[in-house]
Image (cartoon, rainbow, N blue to C red; front, side, top):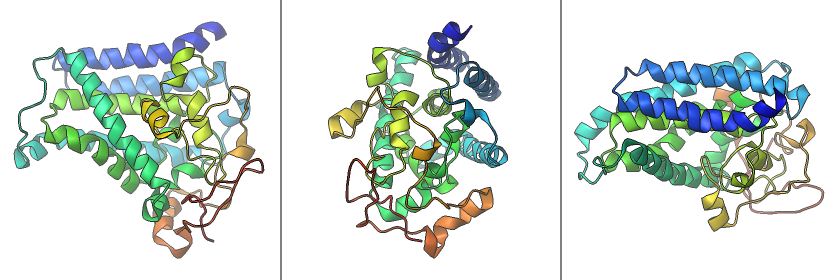
Amino acid sequence: MRARARYGYAPFLLLGLNGAGIARAAAGAPKYWLLVILALAIAVSFLVERIIPYDASWNHERNDTARDRIHVAVNETLILASVATIPLLAAIVPAPGIWPSSWAFVAQVLIAIAIADLGITVVHLASHKIAILWRFHAVHHSITRFYGLNGLMKHPLHQTVEMAAGVAPLILIGLPVNVASVLALAVAIQLLLQHSNADYRIGPPKYVLALNEGHRFHHLKWAGIGDVNFGLFTLIWDHLMRTYSYNAARRFDSTQLGMAAHPDYPTGYLAQLLYPFTGSGGCDLGATQSDPNRVNAGSARELVT
């Protein structure tokens, strides 16, 4: 059971559930299929995290489960709403007709993922360098345990900015609604895998795919040290931007997660919504806070209290 979970979990979500989404969308199925597949992905995620946990303590409640479920509900609703508005946006901004609609449906989905990956990665990188963006992105980095639902634990304004960066270029070139639906599902599944507490294995693709082994380095709490591995779907752009980091020998625990400069970041949902608008929610781009073994300056991740 453990071996099947360790080596089968990622392929089941990446290929099985995304594949089911592609098949349903290509057949013109009603959009509720997206929620059904997503619910299955979340259920499997929770099950596998208990069969093969990376850190068993991360499976335990820290007065954050209800908050995280609200984040998931709000942000997944925003993702679905963005899909629903595509026909309206297409009517307002006519596409130049360059979308490869004659290509195989799976190829169209892969193109959408590749373009969205670039846009979201760029905004993610900018969110660690530009103070106003970090105010809202910091909500995501306040986590002190790593598990599937963390992926959608984001301030809704930052979630909107990220999705706009990923989807807007696609809409401008004629993104079809059925492709957008699969993209929305793929984003949600990717976030589950990327933040999973499951100690799964994918072999050499871990150097290219943005999954949990690499993404843990992004959540290291010291300013500058965690400014790595920004990709959502792939690590290709991180390799090109020289922001890729990985060390197979490193082990993670809660003492290394969160924000070293702001360990008392608000934990309640409403408090996290409002905090970026307060004076304490700002940050000093010139300050540094680093891992005892390394010093890096120039990060937005030092918050002023």
